[in-house]
Every structure is written in C-alpha cells, then in structure tokens.
Image (cartoon, rainbow, N blue to C red; front, side, top):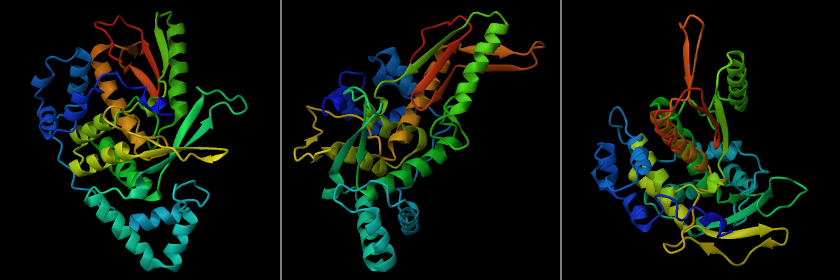
Length: 347
C-alpha cells in the first residue's frame, strides 16, 4: 500500500523545495498579488497552473473555522449507524447514545475537538487510519483493481465535511471557482448531463459532416495522487481559507498512521509519511478529498481554456453560439475539439 500512495513521487511540485515553498506565507502572498518572479525558472506548465489561480479581485480571507456544537449534534443525529467509522471502535451508535443519554460527556468531547481544531492539535487516536480495499470488479480479484478507502475517526470526517464540503464549496460556487464543465460533487448537477452532452457533440458533428476529435480520459488513482500542500495552497489563494485551517488538513494527512484491514483483521504493522518517503492523496473516504480534487480540476480547466480552442457550435443564423472545451465528472474527463488548436493543450 505504501508504494501505491507514493506513486505521485517524481511528478511536478513533489520535490522537497516545492513542499516547503507551498506552505510559505511569502509564496502564497506573491501568487495572490500575481507576482510570479519566483516561477521564472519553472516549466511553462507550472507557471500557467499558478497563473490560473489568479482572481479578478483579491479574495477576502476567511476567519478561522469554528465547528459549532449544533453542527456536531446534527452530524451525529443524521448519520446512519451502519456507517463504518472509527479505528478505535467508537461506533456511531455509541455517539448517539452519548448524545441522548449522557449529553454532558458528549459536550465535553465537542469542547476537546473544537479546542484541538483551533490550536491545530491532533489527538493520538485521530492519527490512526485503517485502509479497506474494495474490489472494483467483484468476483474477479485483481491487485491493480482495488479501491482503497480510509476509515478515520468521526470527528475528523465531521470537521472535513463542514469546512471543506460545505463552507468551502459554497464559496467556490459563489466566487466562480468551480468550472462549469464539472458535473461531479456539486449540487443540481448530474452525471447524465455529461453523457448527454457527449452524444449531442457526436450527433451535431455527424449531421454537419464536420471534422472533430473527442478523447476520454480516466485519471489513474487520481484521489491517491493529490498533493495535500498544493490543495491547501489553492484553497488559500483562490478562496481565502484561513492559514490554520489549511495547515490542520496538511498536518493530519502527513501525520496519519496507516494500517490495512483484510478478512484476517487489521494489520499490527503500520506505515507513515516522512520527508524521505512521502505519501500522497487526501484519502478516499475523508470528506475533504472530493472538494480538493474539484479545486484542482477548476485550475486545470482554466489552464486548458487559455491554450485550446475546444469545440464551437452555432445555429444556422449564427444568432446562438456555444463553446465547450471539456466535460468532467470528478476525474473522468471528455475533451473535444472541432477547430484547429493554436497552441499546445495543457492537461
């Protein structure tokens, strides 16, 4: 498993110097102010990626997130008891009993959780992560067709869901930092819409006898290649996430102690992140992995819009024109072109 989560090593922005730079306040401020002098010696792809994070107006920094007691109560109340959680054995049924029968202890646990969040402290049991391997093709076990899902303590998932999946995604939608081409992980969006678009592209091109090219891309192990420090930097630059909230996510990802669960139980041995043996991915099963991927997807889409003409369709009277570059459902992407591109597409 350690090899699987280290497969992003060697790709851009994974060097020790970049790992350090992405967390520096000076670097974040330079990108926010569109000062790219420190990127002059980098590849054109890296330069364009950071330039695509630029905002029309400087984003107001969010105040540090404080998880309210009502949010914590609602999370425990609404979640189903059958939901798998807690490597330490704190089943959701236990939390529901505490809430209803021993509310004082439930409140004390909330106070400890909120204090830890404000002070960026990770409790020892929070660091323990159990990885479960789910076969993508049930009945035909193949080692390269297993989906690793992380089981973490409910407090971590509750914080990630409230901060990243709700607050941050709402601001991303409000500020235009969510590509219109993305149909996954968003309210009022459906996977069927991307499929319908593809059928319409084919039909229109065929009816007009128009040359076109369409490529389907399924990014391999994309959730397990995400760079926590890059996602944190994007959240700060594009959405003004508070520095302590960004660091809390990075600190957790880099402090996890991974165990693997099989039919024979949970492994006693563990593996961890280290500067000399980095692990990547925000972790499928943790609520910030999806929003993190959508943030990166938006930046990539903006890069592509600058470098590829994509597809253009117009009505017979040319009164209606529609331009499309790609359609995405999370990490599944369909790219199309029915014009000559003027420069290399950055993907």
